[in-house]
Length: 160
Image (cartoon, rainbow, N blue to C red; front, side):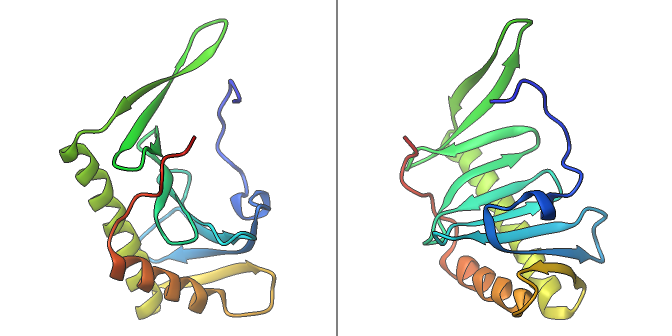
């Protein structure tokens, strides 16, 4: 893990693990949204640098970064991981979320995903660029969001 964090200058360019990816500008947001799919079918959605959500091939949440905290699925809940830095090392302090905290994180995620879906539906999301350049990224993302939201928030199996 890197000891120093920095904002990404061009997430769209740097997110090369996302074989299919697109950058969108939303009328209601200053930060761009970058979303994409890995070659194995996992999806990621970045609302600027924070929050971001990472899903498995079945749309279950694997990891997230929200309000400066890392979250990792434990199968039945999320573990909040906080970076603690000293002069010599960086360690992750882990705490499992209780039911109320888990619901809060998942509800906020659903709201963000629904806002993105609605922006794609009503035309207030403008596709800035996509990779590869052919295809209809906005349509693909909208289909993914519709499926994701119709199933409700679910957690992936614990990450080992």
